[in-house]
Amino acid sequence: MPHGCTFVHLVGISKPSPWKRGQFERVDLASVRIAIEAARAAAAAHFIYLSVAQPAPVMRSYVRVREQGELAVRAAGLDATFVRPWYVIGPGRRWPLVMLPIYTVLELLPPTRASALRLGFVSIEQMTRALVWSVEHPAHGARVLDVPAIRAGRV
Image (cartoon, rainbow, N blue to C red; front, top):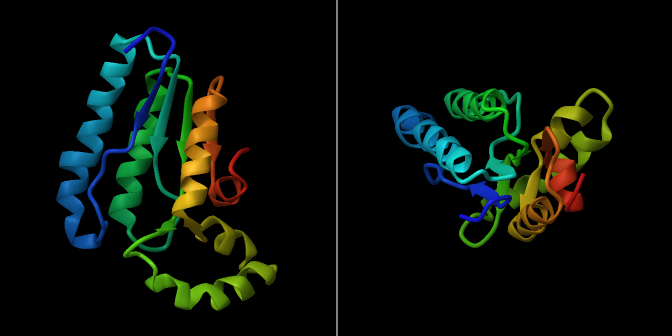
């Protein structure tokens, strides 16, 4: 890995669910710790970590492990971008679209707007654009791309 490069961490258990709690720690958390050491050894200038929207009312063990991953990256002192989607819509993962009208209403109501935006859906195309933008625009310090930023493709 050349000096000054960007390290992109995309490792994690597919299709997270509460019964995979142990796997989150063994795979997701362990992989980010190893990735941090690899990025440091390579003198990577920027670390991109695919995290998850926080806080969230469900999937607590998954969110907790991703939060610990972010904390580990921050503690390592790396310039980093934390990409925080909630649910990515793509091939084979379209069932939540039936909930889209509900999300639209929740995003409009003041009492639920912030949560609905934070826990909104993003498309695989939006995720790809946000990741490419993050590589092309390295962070200085720590930066979070939440669902609205992912939808926009940038901060």
